[in-house]
Image (tube, rainbow, N blue to C red; front, side):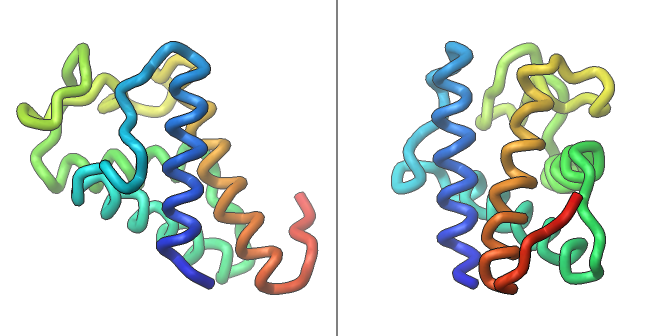
Amino acid sequence: MNIEQVARIAHETNRAYCASIGDYSQPLWEDAPEWQRVSALTGVNFHLTILKKGSHPSPVASHESWLQEKKAQGWKYGKEKNPEKKEHPCFVPYDELPLEQRMKDFLFAHIVEAFYAAEAKTTVVR
């Protein structure tokens, strides 16, 4: 499996979804800063690790993994996303996220799962 390809597709899906809810701040994968591409790659690896153990990462676990990564990099809560200040409005527990933000975790998880299932040539049953 090409991890970068999966991360790119997850990123571009997130970008398209964000645009559908009026958030045009997400750059194309090619234009995304290194930290953003690395974050997507980290997310893919997090999901694959759990899938390989025969389980399914929950949206909560996905968000918590992202939150831990951002915290380790010095990010904090901010009303608006500001990479220079390392502030992000999603820097909150999962249950405090609005539904439109939670959707990103569902989309990401299902993209990784689809590639994992296709490579395994099996259908992932929920």
